[in-house]
Image (tube, rainbow, N blue to C red; front, top):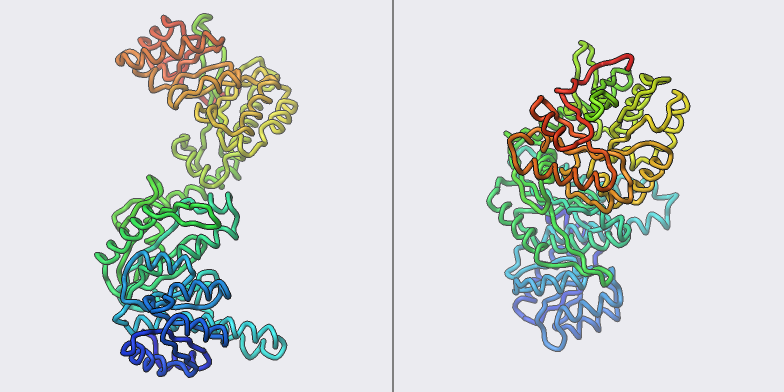
Length: 561
């Protein structure tokens, strides 16, 4: 609720142009305006309004839509052509989306429906008048900098409760409202994939998008819900009441509008979607819970609406990830990362000819942590390159001056950071290893990646003498033409097919197809997850070249190979 006395004080130096053709409505609304503003010019149609505007300057223009000679929208468009920063408010009895959209495109700052709800109008005037006064104060401040710094700084800070770009209430204002000790309802709106727009078009362009979005979202404000812009692409609607059902309806309307309407920015059509979260309650950190809900939604999809569920395990998962990230940092810093080796058997020669280097971590209690427990925290912490370097270093150290072939797993992140070529050069020299002793295993998803930087690195590593293997082949949409460019040495069939090869006919046929394709191109084929003699005999009979799995040997901590 806006204090009318405070609003009148803020509006005492604000000049108003009011245009309305209906005598009764004009008289009633004029009386209200005179309660707040001292400088008011009144016109009865759009042509009079344009004439008055050309003769004088006004801080705010308030106009009806349907008027003779020149409509309010036509008048507004012409005024905006003369001064795009002119503040204009539409007052209309027509609650039509076409009028909203046209008003937004013109750049109208407010839209008031008849019959007028004066509390809502007070709030709208408060926002616009505060923004105008802030601007005037800033201009005065610049012109009289030395004299005004000490005197006016506190006053500017008090008045600066609006977002500079959109004119909406800002995060500081929202935080203050959230402190009140009553039940509140929050709708948090986060534009999906906004970084892609920033990267594609630049910040100046996306600022225009945000302005248009804010103007559209203003149409969803009400006497219950007030709109805020928190940061870049995040908006919020806050009610000082518990109104879950109303918030669901508003969220659905916002989603429907953006799903069915495009924004035209600098003649470029932009389609936006939102991830929307809702929560309500008293003495709750609604921003935190709503943000958690959006993150949880985005784990699975975007353009969704979610209501905070206190029984969700997502928050606990986030805390665990944070704890695990801290532990991982300690493990790396304390050199608790180690390498186990699993034997790979040459089936035709009937002997072990290679080993795969597998990462493990020892805890303080000398317990072993497996990769499925630590790989995700390593990725989240951005430590994958540091981790891979440790594995390479320890694996190379083990085989130095030995005629042993080992394979090492390389991730997509390692390739994106573009350090492997130089690091591997350094390590083969340091440990006196021949490049042909090393097989670099990459996932199939990396091999079909269209990133030229990744392809160039893999080709360079191959030319240096390192061998390449595609791990888990068959788990993705295999791109055979991509494999031809890479000229890999080994195809490692996805273990999910091998472990069912004795019971699942489809798995058997898939393995046969991969084997035929690979042999025709001259690639050696490795079957992993060979867990028993029956499966070993099947892969042997099929003509697969190498086998890996518990039947061949379990991963072991080996000092000497």
